[in-house]
Length: 104
Image (cartoon, rainbow, N blue to C red; front, side, top):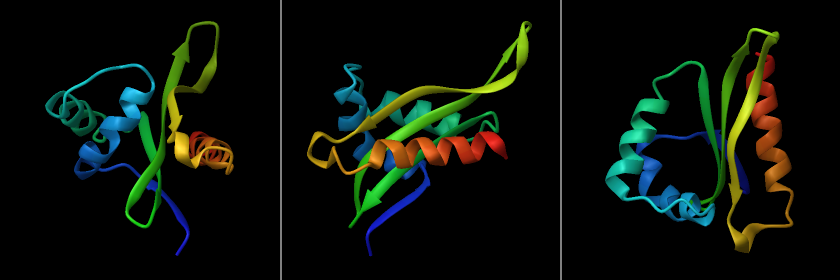
């Protein structure tokens, strides 16, 4: 089936925990689930995951960013790929998902 890129879901929290901690941000499943539940309801935020055979290999969080000095833009606030899945182009593909969302 290959790699599927899709929006993150609250049900992904357990599988995302290790990837969040890979960035150096220790968390608990409960806190991560609460943050994910909130973020998935906000239209100015998007979270995408890369999934293969039921395993989450990476994620990206992008949000709409507003500034007095410039037009709205998109800001990537997190991007990580599992160490075992690196060098396969997943980071670039996740960035492409975020770019598509930002253009829309």
